[in-house]
Length: 79
Ligand SMILES: [Zn+2]
Image (cartoon, rainbow, N blue to C red):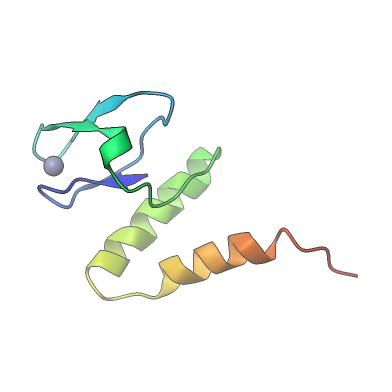
């Protein structure tokens, strides 16, 4: 998941691709030059993360940070 540096459009991308075209402004973006905000194999989680990051960029939500935190936490085993 990346954010277009030109128009701030949040976009899910296949990280095995080298470039992607922004759905917001049509600019061709080179993935290795961009910050990868979130990585997931799950389309469902990707959609969720895009929604949360959009809210985060608007300054309306801390949920995106919580999501990343939860992802980290889930690697620990609970007894
Ligand atoms: Zn754009």
